[in-house]
Amino acid sequence: MNFNPAAELQKIMNLSPFDGVNPVISDSATFAFSEADVMTDTFEGKTEGCFLYSRHWNPTNVHLAKALAAMEGAEAAWLTSSGMAAITSAILQLCKYGDHIISANTTYGGSYAFFANYLPAKFNIEVSFVDITDLEAVKKEIRPNTRILFTESMTNPLLQISDIPALSEIARANDLKLVVDNTFTPLIISPLKLGADVVVYSMTKFINGKNDCVAGAICGKEDFINSLIDVSSGTAMLLGPVLDPPRSAAILKNLHTLHIRMMKHSENAGFLASRFKEAGVKINYPGLPDHPGHKLLGELMNHGFGYGGMLAIDMVTTDNASKLMVAMQDRGVGYLAVSLGYFRTLFSNSGTSTSSEVPVEEQKRMGLSEGLVRFSVGLDMDIEHSWKNIEACLKDLNENQ
Ligand SMILES: *Cc1c(COP(=O)(O)O)cnc(C)c1O
Image 1 (cartoon, helix red, strand yellow):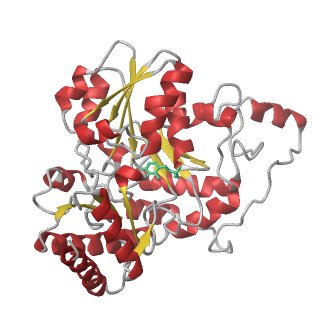
Image 2 (cartoon, rainbow, N blue to C red; image 1 turned 135 degrees about the horizontal axis):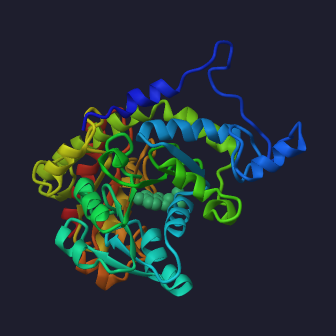
């Protein structure tokens, strides 16, 4: 890819002279109009740059939405109160009662549960789950009422790489919308530039990077974003999952350091991945040459940000995984916690936590080991020291068996 998301971000973060370097926070739910007919026009979507009510738009949210749109090469973006709000709003906007969706079988547990349980029960929307790296399997699932193809750029927790250009060709040929969750790989992958129609984010993770709030975003064509917030029919406007403006102001400030953080997360994860491999631990990291998606990721990625901060090791049994995680926490390697993209390393046993919504049989079928420990590698200053601690935990575990 020759897209440069960092340069696009820098371009948009420009000020008029005498403005504060950080934009003024608009702390208002409602906005005053000078003329009554301007208010009427605004309700009808006929006015540009007029604010009506913060569930729709807010000047502070516009700053962050514009920055994200620039970073993604998108026409527009809209901010949500969580990643799940971004996913559910985008999906519900794109399909209706009785439609069909094809989803990667290895997605975030919340997305999986929304597709497997919620949509069929409430909207008679059937969802087929496929191995997203098997393009023939994807094609086989297409039905006359299929509307959406859903995947994650780098899937959770198996770290498969989605071939976005190939999936987008399939989507185009069959009049489907390709929706991509890019939560694991901001800056590294630019799905819209590779042919996706809509990108969704949990900004809770790398984008905000502080684990002090939940937030999300939807990026895509201007028409699509406008349809989401249409006052009479927009899913986002009517279900109301808007991001609070003071939070969006805080996240905008963190966006300025995203590139540095992604580089460091990637560097540290690459280091640990090599050490795990040398130590004979079964390791899954897309930056390692023997990862099945390594070459593809190399073709899709924007260079300079590395292969990402996520890795997974296989401890074979849940019991071993639990013992290792507790030992690592005691030795200060990081925290036994869900979520990702934090300063410190976070680890969890996916099968019993962030993928627990996926039935055990399905976990087995997709190759999710019960002993899988997913790491979000932190910004450790001394990663060699962190490895020494991990190594000591592995040694204790082996000796006590
Ligand atoms: C965390 C996560 C979500 C959900 O985001 P929230 O902000 O927790 O609602 C969705 N997709 C992926 C890949 C995630 O990691």
